[in-house]
Image 1 (tube, rainbow, N blue to C red):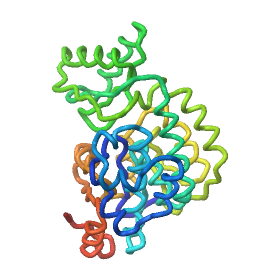
Image 2 (tube, rainbow, N blue to C red):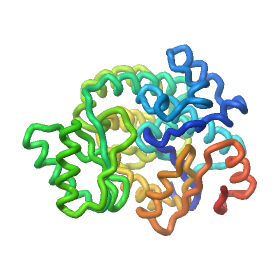
Image 3 (tube, rainbow, N blue to C red):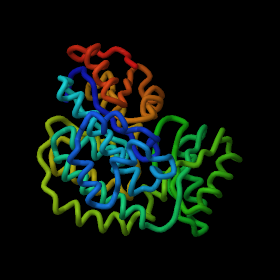
Length: 316
């Protein structure tokens, strides 16, 4: 993969927000995915339009909601003529990347996402927190100290320089948070998630989910996907499947993902979803890059009108 061009990015759980899919649902985007969710017991159509923050927070709701939103936005962009150089997604967002690249159908991936959300929601209780102002190595050592005392605690997300997320039991997060403050961390921020994702507490869920994943046929991706669990560029169906299998209990190496995409030629990124969180991270990882956020049909249309043949300019 070489040459300048945009890479599509998709946010993960925690980015959900009330009204995030109102305009997409009203425009009729990806109605088959909404129907699949309805049939599985998740009233996604209503939740995307009028759901409260509390209603959108549960894992089994947030994941299909974000998946639908990401896929619907990517469809508008690609059908409108955008030709991505590559794609990546933060945790759940990686499923959007896989569909955008044509390695899975939207329907097959929605089925997996619904099952993934249910399994993760049923995992042992835990939580996550972002530690600001302390580097990765220091936090890994603090997690080892707390884990040695009997708590499950690991670094889950290497999001950006000075922003690392830990995943643990409630007590583990509390202990590491206190140690981090004593070591000079600026802030400890609890995350809006429903469990200790990307940690050993997801082990049983990951094992059960792998059995579901292995029953699904993957196609060769039309463009590369950066695997969150390694940061490596995946160009085959086998590599894409492996990346999804390993990510549930493994870490999200977002710094490595963005550096790999930039090294492969991505000069700009288009974030498909609510919040614009990834853009803030990207500016700290590759300061020379630009990230453009789209979160509705209107912002997609405006972006495409100003984008032309891939010479990206800021929109929205």
